[in-house]
Structure formats: structure tokens, C-alpha cells
Length: 401
Image 1 (cartoon, rainbow, N blue to C red):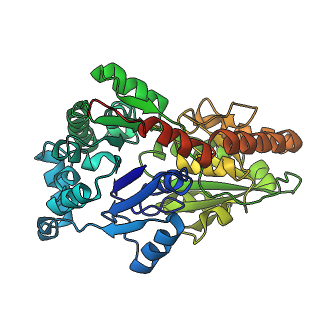
Image 2 (spheres, rainbow, N blue to C red):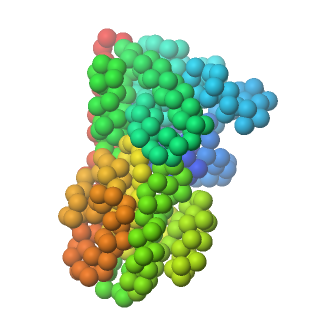
Image 3 (cartoon, rainbow, N blue to C red):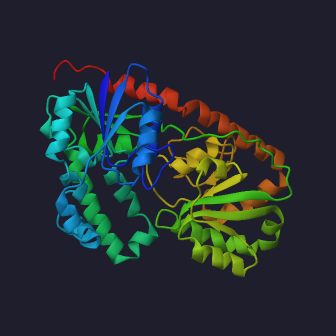
């Protein structure tokens, strides 16, 4: 089977400046009979040497597609405003170039995979070709859930932006119901929302493959267990993090006696400063060269995610690499783990401090929970398994086209 891939993000083993990990995992572990060619807009800004290395790694030609010139004529801040307030669709949807259409006609593939949805308009230019569009989340559901966030409701600018993005999401997702298009979600609720909202039956839900794994000995016998908080302090985590802090500070002495906290990601300066003022002495790293190698230095990952959809890649990676993950219901959505068996799910973020103290009193049990989480994720989110299922579903020949 010959597959042409059109992606905004050049595939990488871990997410790199964007959602580039999912597509890598599915392509890397594809069946032997699947031949691929990748067309990338390279939004994640990989260098030419890195792209050449990826060509060897993925056994594929990677061709970079340049953005239309008009994109460079407009300052980024105005491009964002134009996309938000004036355009009917996200501006990336208008960047399907004739040169790309001609490449695809020349390739004559059996299947065209569009990732993410930005380039779904290609299906109108090539109506006799089979397409799979990866969301990979349902945009409308993301916006509906965001209305429940205090961060959104208390900020008129964010509220208006979210409403406009919801309207856009509803508009372009309605356009996916075409005879030559199938839709791929990595969120079960996203899949259900899509079917219920639009009444379409052209979508499938598949588990998200885990990313790079490393060998790690799970050992909860140390005096101090190392905690990692990974991601960004933004609207996806802000609400739960802010609610978590008072009880952490209130139980400072017991927490300090048993745990060491490290932040990894962006915008944690204020939170680190707040905790350091109370005597926590947290570490803070904005970026690491090898994410999986960094992960296995820790015992526990805190994932205080306030809202979201789909599958959280950082949660999946932590579980796959043997960390005990403590998170919200959104953190574990679409991941094959269970509370107190292979993960710890808190009911409200104020409870996180008491959860940590409970772990400190029963380290052997919770080391076993971390081990079970690793086993579950490596089994059910195995990229070989998911890649084969992906091409089984979307590689089927539709004789009506």
C-alpha cells in the first residue's frame, strides 16, 4: 500500500515544538507492506540535517512544503487576529498549495493521511482519492469543555476567543462528511461528540501509542521520592495547580521530608518562586535534550490538568517509563489504567497533598501501582499494535470511489 502523508509537523520520536510524536509512532512501526512519502510544512522548525536523519529512520522521502508568500507578509500577531476574528476557518486551512496537489496527483497513492486537520480541504481537490483526517482531538469538544474553566469564564477576551473558535470548529468539522474521508480520533469522548453532534459515521477511535521508552528500575525505597511536574503552566493546568498549592504549603514539613519537586516546561517561574519562598527549594528545567532519559530520573509525575480532550502524551510517556502518575480525570482520559491499580486519580486538586502523604506511608504498595501502570500502557498503547490497527482500518479499499 502506498501512502502519502501531509503534515504540519515533521514527525519526531517525542513531541517537538508541536504535536509531532503521534504521527512518528504510527509511521515508524507501520506494517512492512506500507510505503510512505511525507510532505511537511515543518511548523516545528526542524533543520535539514535532522530531516535527513528522519528520512533514514522512517525509510521515507520527506519533502518540505513552503508556506504561501502572503503568510510572511503579515505580522504573526495580525495573522492570529485575522484568523480569530475574520476568517471562517483557521488560517492554516487556506494554505493548500497547487504544488502540493500536483505532487499528490503524481504520486497517485492508495491513501492520503492528513495530520492535523488543517489540510482536509485537499479532499475536495482530489475527490477520487481516499483520505484519513486526524483531528486528533475534536475541536468543538475542546471549546465546549473550556467554557467550564474558571480561567475562561473570568476573562472576557478568552471567553470571546473561545466562542469564535467553537464556531470555527463546528464549521470545519461539519465539512468532514465526504465519501472519500474517514476521521481518526485518539479520544473516545471526542469520537462520541463528533458522532452525536453531526450525526456522521465516518470516524474511528484508536488508542494513542506511547512514545520513547527507557529501562528503569522502579524503587520507592529512597528516603525522598522525586516528583516531576511536566508541561506548561497555562490554561490547561493553571486552575488545578493554583488549587493544589495551599495544601502543599500547609503540609510543607511532611512533604519536604519525603519528596523533592522538579518542574519541566514553560511558565513555572511564579509557582517555583511561591514554593521556594516557603522553603521547598524546587528545581526548574525549561527544556531537556532527551525527554525519556530525563523522565526515568523521577519516581512520581504530578499531572494536575484542569481540562482537555484526547490523550495527554506526557501522562502516557510517564506511565510507559515507570513513573507513578497522580492526575485528574482529564489526565487519564483514553489511557488504559485504573485508579489505585495502575495510577492515582484525585477527585479535587486540594487532595494532592494528602495523596502524597499517603504514598509516603505506603511506598511498597505505590511502587507496585507504578509497575502495573507501566505494564498496562506498554501492552495496550504499544505503537506496533496501534500502527497495524490504523492501517487495517484506513487502508481498506473502498470500491465506491
